[in-house]
Image (cartoon, rainbow, N blue to C red; front, side, top):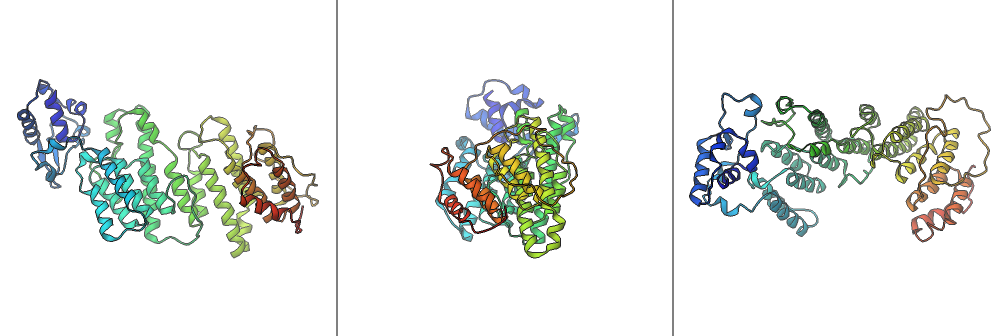
Length: 472
């Protein structure tokens, strides 16, 4: 058995995976001496061939199928030259990640060329048995945060060349970097500047590859046999992997990889550059339910982008602002969101304060009837009674709403300080000063918020209570 473990160390795989190979079944006997460990190395060399890339691969068995032949395992030959490799058997991907993390913690701020090469070598010069996808993701994300996008792209391709399959986190990390954010919890700054052709191309390639990956993972999770799954390899732009397949074997791990995160990261990239039409195309292509359907981040990103694009269009082109029709567009998204979230019980698909705030901001910039709808949402979700105001004096012909008031129950939420500040500021910006004053007074008398009110809210409240005109 120890003989098997020695073989597995040379291969860089688990003993269980090693025992799965027919040639090793006769070796399951006691083996405790260094001599037998060396014999294990000789066995590997005798049972493998050296490829042109310096990687030892198992010799093909003519009786094996195509999928079995594709399961290539190995290490760089330069690392196999060391006779005392077993002395460092405690080194693995975890120890590499610790080294990388400690290096990053000691070097804050911009890196020079020498430092960049030093930290990169921690990963690129490590043998495969000391690496895994999370280690590559850590370095790729680090370079992305430093805005070293060419190096980030190079590392991504090196990762694939060395036969490490990218994960959902890999795709999200790269797309978040192109979006100018450090992690998925952040929102991009809106530059509306056209990205370079290379950046746009690379971001689009990564997004498409992420969708191919999600498709593979979804098909694998539907009880597809290993033989069928191995034949699902797809040709990806850039570097072609010898083995284009999901790197996980545990079903729960596979299912956890099927996620909307890469799509959200790509939407944030498009959002940053004001590409609303492309965002709509991506949104409409999403599943209606399941792990690849829009989640709370998806809808929040759509509303936030819609708001900023409408403001930008208003300043630059009145025709664009009229074409966008922020009120009806936002209400259509909201109706879909409410209906979708009412069908399930996913913690990532529940209405929260940030989502409501972004939606309210949008419809307060819309038509009078959209603004009236805002009062309904505010009361239904935040339990803040509407002011006694008349409906628009001028009758407006409206098409039947997609979602009638009360047709789907909206969960109550306690308004927080951030949402309260956004609400008052949005009302005042929409020249609804009477409404702004009304809600400001309600919030100031809210005892649960009194101890949390910050300088930002108090500044906004002071302006709202100044009574400097505006419509009701």
